[in-house]
Image (cartoon, rainbow, N blue to C red; front, side, top):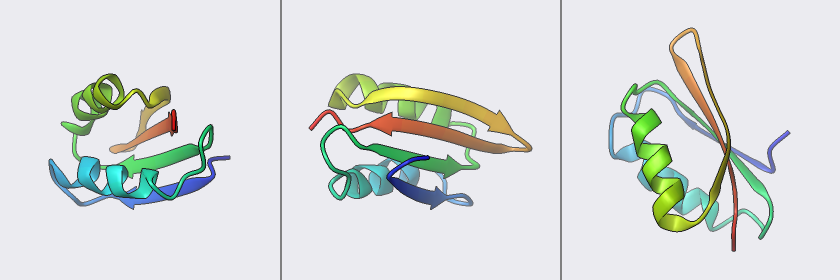
Length: 75
C-alpha cells in the first residue's frame, strides 16, 4: 500500500507527470507514491521521470486501460 495515491486518470501528457511531481513533495523520504493514469504515454513519461528525478520506479502495470506506477521518494 502506497503512502499517497494520485488519480491522474483522464489526464493527458504532461499533466500526470506534473501532478506526480507536486504530489511527491507531500510524500516522506523513503515513502511511496502510487499514480493511476490512462494516458499510454505515461509509461515512457514515468520511466523518464524516475531517471531524471532519482525517484525509484518500484512497480509499473496496466489493467483495463489504467496504468499504475509506484515510485519511491528518494528525498
